[in-house]
Length: 343
Image 1: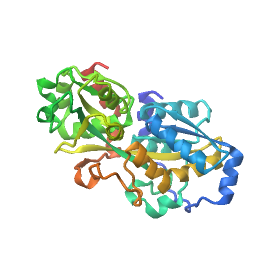
Image 2 (image 1 turned 60 degrees about the horizontal axis):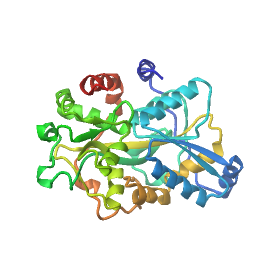
Image 3 (image 1 turned 90 degrees about the vertical axis):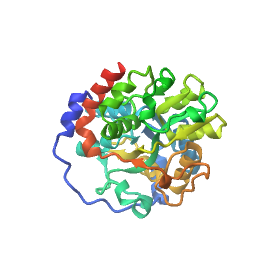
Image 4 (image 1 turned 45 degrees about the vertical axis):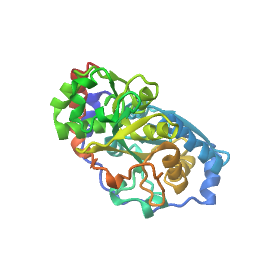
């Protein structure tokens, strides 16, 4: 979908309110029906290594059902779904991105099937699930500043967002792109609200290495190509720290952007019963604990236990996104970003 079509679609009247469907449990009947489907296709913006581990856990738990993981940046997932549905192509069963605006749009377009797994109904915070039952927050993570401690002494590391404008960091930073990554779209929006476009204009003069996905800046740090990342996702940093890579996260005093990854089941799903089962599985304690342990993702499941080495969300000042405010600014964000960063 072009940006013009997206904005036009977002300007449509809100989807009519409907009562959320009754919550459903994973039953032997549902499992048997899903096994007859034999497959589920998952479009996701979660890092492919994490998504593949999740798929393996599902296949181990429910034999006879294959999981096809299709991973891309949030904005690419959004575009692909729109292009396929507009062409009458129905490949995906379950979708997940880290851009909350996407799901409000999908809902208005009637592209989602409302369904509410028991775990979501009983245990999820009310503000982390759609009141009409069309989607829920499958994961959350932060968009963080981080640096290689062997390449940048702690005394020289930035403490605030505006510290990144210091000339001493010129040519040492890497960041991802809001036109590809929903995490970075979220981060760009909340930071321009906090600091203004002047911050990004000056940051664009710092010879910043530009990559696409928010999964990539941590990898550039791991490879030693840059000493400092501006907006890579937190969960990849956690994974690298667990592997012994000398990286430290900075949670600035001004706040750190929080990106929520919603998930939903698409209407006209080619494998509807497998989709229903997989969707419920995503919110299970086992899947959510795997995401936390192996993926470093934050979870809204109250029974998930985080590693003690990680800073609890309660100790971090968070910058929250209001999707209604972001929607009309998407094109402005992309245009300004291209102007300031040349890409």
